[in-house]
Image (cartoon, rainbow, N blue to C red; front, side):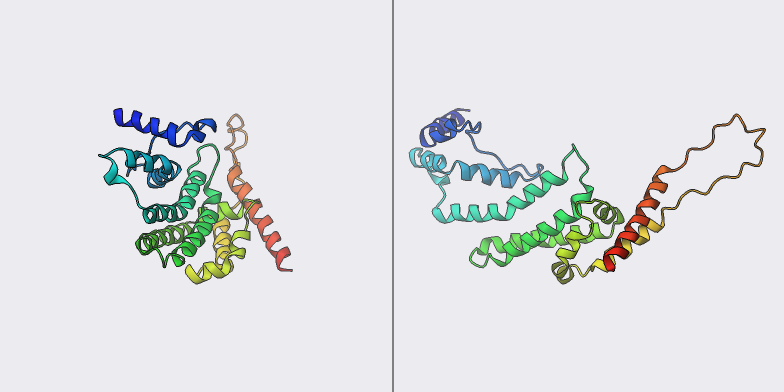
Length: 241
């Protein structure tokens, strides 16, 4: 608690503009292995408080051993470039105020493209190449697993915001890394929608004896899905012509 108070005093001295801007943070974040994106948040806060960290280490003998070199601060900034999109993707997909399944595949595709681009640009950052490669490998597995689940495909295609646009726009990249074409996605979607059929009308052989019975409710979900399937077929035919 005493060190925290001393650090807050340094922040007020070394970065008075933070107080003027109304910033509420005056201390560092700690990495927590069980919390999403905590490593990103730790680095993000440290970079925001970089002048205060340097001043604190320069004026505190016990903290001097924790001072980072210019190269290490640069490394931290490069790591932020790698982790920032992961944090943004988490915020989108983990939202609890609106459905996010329809955004899963588009977010995965955009995120994988970013990670590949950063991975290829890390030749001067040897320490980040291996972590970046491990992240890319894991993201590819997540995306391939998501493609195998029709719910992800259906929710994306049925969303007017996305439909097949994201797949068509990025098809060369997707084919190179995932080998899943637009036609593959459409075929999978049609196979899924074929499983939704309108319920067959039930025969009422004994109308008099069962006149007081409440008829079973119709499956509006199946009817709705069937109509969507027809609309999607008509839309694909129109697009092809």
